[in-house]
Length: 385
Image (cartoon, rainbow, N blue to C red; front, side, top):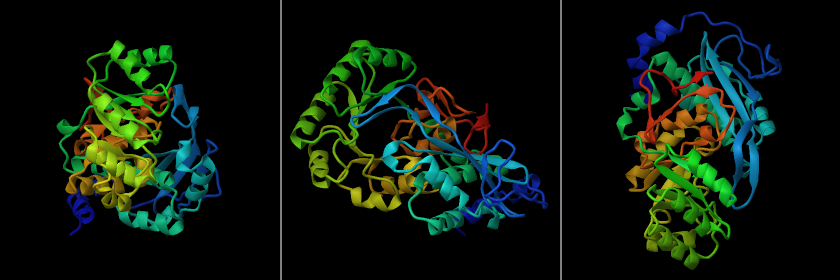
C-alpha cells in the first residue's frame, strides 16, 4: 500500500465526517464568481477551483544583482469540495518566466471537476503535466491548495501527516537586499527578532554590506546569496574565505547555474557549504548536482508544490546533501506550506511573507527566530484575515 492510500485508509472516518455524499454544482472556467474572480473548470461533481490575481506590495524595494522591484505578481487559488476549502498561491518573480496571464491561462484550462477525490494528488499532478509542461508556479498553487484541503479533511497539519518532528524546524533567516547603507541599517533593525540574516550579493559593494551588518549586529550569523552574480571562481573562493572569518554559514548560488565546472571547483575548495538555488528546480535536477554543490534550496514555486518538494528533500538527504527551504515574496499561504517541510531542512529562508505589506493570511509563527509549527491548524496551517 502506497503512502497516499495508507493516509486515506487511516483517516477514512475523518473524511466521511467532514465530506457529505452530496456535492453542489459549480460554475465553469468561463464564468466569474460574485467577486469577479476567474473560476476554474469544476463540472457538477468533484473539485471546484477559483483563482484571481493579487499583486504583492513590498515593504522595501527588493534589489538583487540583476534587477530591482517593489511588487511581485501573484495569483491566489482556492479549491473547494462540499464546503471545505483549501488555499494555494502562485508567486511569480521575473526570473521564473511565468506571469499572471500565463498562470491564469493554465489554471483556466484545467478540469479539476473530473476528480471527486482530493487525495489523488499524484494523479492530479500527472494530469497537470499532461495539460502543459513547465508552469511550475501555477502547478504549485494547485498542489498547495490540495494539501491544505486534504489536511483540513483529515484534521491534521501536514508536518504531522508526514511524521515530522516540529521541534527540529530550523531558524529562518531574514533577507537584507542590496541597498544604500542607511537603508541596510533600517532593514537590520527591523530584523532584530531574527537569529540569522541573509545578505544578497553580486555587486561591487558586497563586503561593505557585510561590514554594515557586523557594525549593527556583530554576533548574528549570516548567510549569503549571490544570485549568480560572481563571475570569477578565484575571487569567489577568496570571498568565501573572507566570509567564513565573519560568521557566514553558507553561500547560495555564487555563479551562473550553467557554470557547472566552476561550481564544482568552488564547492571542493570552499570553507563554506555551497548551496544550489537557480541551478535546481525539480526532482529530476537533484541527483546530477551531487558533487557540484553541497546542498539544494527547495522552493515550492520551482518544484511545483509540496508533493515534489518532499521527494526532493528526501532524495537530497539520502545523497548526503544539505537541504534548504526557501521562498519567493509570497503571502503566508505559500510560506506556511513550505514550513510544513522545515523539520527536514538544515537551513530555512522563509521570510517572504514578512517582506510584504498586504498579507491575506495568518500562518506560520516565528518564536525566538525559529519556525514554530502549529499542531492546531490543519492543512498548511493558515487562516484568512
